Amino acid sequence: MPSVQVNTCSSALGGSFGAAYAQPGRLAHMEELADRIRRLRTRRGLSQAALASLMGIKPASVAEWELGDSRPAMHRLPKLAAVLGVSVTALVQGTHTEEDARREELVGILPRLEGEALDVLLRMAKQLARAA
Image (tube, rainbow, N blue to C red):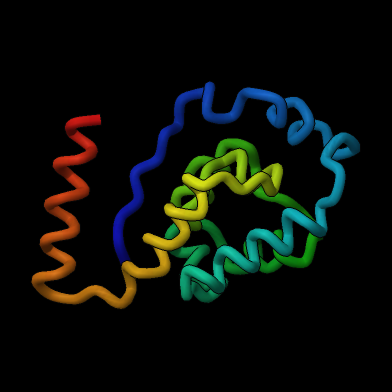
């Protein structure tokens, strides 16, 4: 599995949804978050167990998220979003920007790359990250 870099600064959890996420009554539709997690996980080609492993949690936690019985703790959102290939905002609010669409497209391509193509993409990504 590819490693995932996560922005864990507090500003990643701020903004308009931070307070709403912290107060269960203000998060409009937990089923929508559950459906989004399931959709993004399956699009990435991950089982619940694989997602749990990448997150360092129990598979039962992922199942509870997808059933809407619970939701990820706020401190897990940056890593969950990174693993699923979307922004934290897109994960929590369901907003989908052009950047999110491109990120999802890239995440969908990654499992099909092998050998030299994967090496080339990794080198390019590292160069772009350093330049940013």
